[in-house]
Amino acid sequence: MSDSNSTDFSNPSTFILLGIPGLEATHLWISIPFCAIYALSVLGNFTILFIVKREPSLHGPIFYFLCMLAVTDLVMSTSTMPKMLSIFWLNSREISFSACLTQMYFIHCFSEMESGILVAMAFDRYMAICNPLRYSMTLTNSVVAKIGLAMVLRNGILALPYPFLARQWPYNIELSLPHSYCVHIAVVKLACGDIRISSYYGLFDLFSVIGMDVFFIAVSYTLILRAIFRLPTKNARLKTFGTCISHLCAISALYIPDFFSSFTQRFGQNVPLHLCVLIATVYLLVPPVLHPIIYGLRTKQIRGRLLQLFTHKET
Image (cartoon, rainbow, N blue to C red; front, side, top):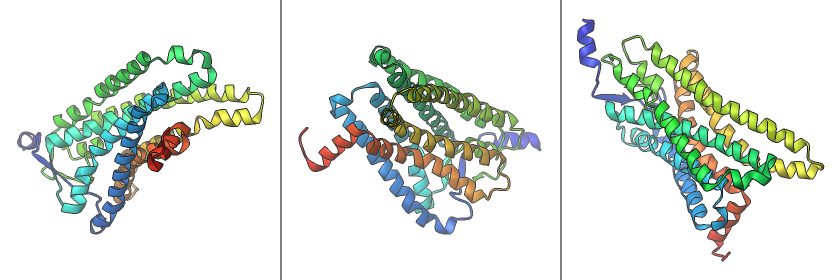
């Protein structure tokens, strides 16, 4: 019997995505803010890329990292939102097993890539504040490109076990996934085997990648704050710290929902399922739309260029 199950269901053809279980009647209404957020995310991140490309004065390390963040946000949100909206609007719930695994890979790869880019931005802020004389010599275009390549390789490799682990398990006949996209832990929970290795790898990845990134960011800001408090005047301290506000907001927008979503998925047995799914969905939607807003409003050069675009003034 078990052999038969293993043979029949080890490679299911499709999963059924349920959207947000318990809130099916409100899917259409939920889709309206989700669609608006996605549209703003695409518009905002393409605007950032356009402005940085067009404005030579923005061709520097922090803006190159911001472009990397924009591309990452676009890929991550686009890998989930079109299918999510088709569930809400057209009740198109089927997703092939291969497409599900591909989506899973992109979600884990690019969400962790965002984390890595925020570490690079923290290093940029550290060099600009603590070692300004060495800033241009250290963060050359070549170094920035190597940092970007390192982020791609690190996260591309570390995300590979997720689809491979999910593919190896035999699955039950009930393949309804209580989610609006293919998240790793929700997929492997449908397996009829011992999935502890998948759960352990997820926790290992969370703490080794996100945990280490948070550690490096914390170290950077400890050194930054120490340098700021040594400045002679209050105005100088506030002005210098103000250059870090955008980055700190971006960190909060990514890590707070990420940790909350990860732990509710694994340990939130008493949390309502629809709330867990909403938290996981918001985690994917919020950072891509907040990052261009944060940097657009807080970065003087980008804000000025935006005003010029809308008022048709020449620089």
